[in-house]
Image 1: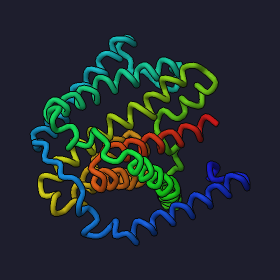
Image 2: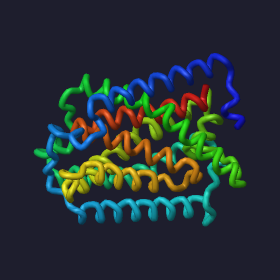
Image 3: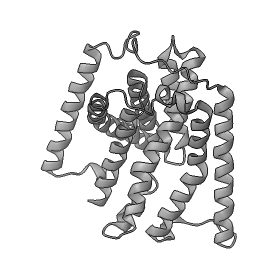
Image 4: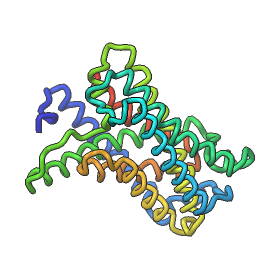
Length: 284
């Protein structure tokens, strides 16, 4: 695969990342981080959310997507825009508009439903910020080689079965390449690295995983993590199918962080870090 044809320095960094990731994984297992008692002592999240709130959030997202699509069609005279033919600044603007129409109203609904008194229970107030940031860094060290290795294996299997080798990654990454050295890269970075990490973690972990946690997840926390991770992967279903297993595992890592610490800070930081690394690989 061309994107694996790297020089000795990059190869050494990859090997180092894999070794570090294996060390982190070994530490998690040694501390019982994957067992039945992994989440004993984790903060409770009795915030009053229900399946109806998840359904309402889904409707808000669908409505936002519909409005976003209608606005685009009206703006471009009835023709859907093609990102590859658009200026990076234009892509950045439409991406932010989409996030503010689809995800931001969902988060506002979540905050309204839980109420200010329960924002801490939801994980919006870090409990031990330093420890949570360290956990996010360790999770990122584990996630990078794990996700890239898994994706490479899936691509290899697909190629062996006759499938084309796709461009694997966020559909905005080619736009970053065109925006390198241009001011338009600033809103692109803000959208993919910051806005996406915060809004998606609040929706998939703060809302969905919390509801699943309350509907039987207190005794089966892994069930809540796995279901939320499936939904997280399917939310990104516009990417090539070879990316979905990696996104599923990435969702598990974020969900584990949230369930373990009862705070959104570590999953948001790990999510932002993962997106930032992908952007940096394209830009630099």
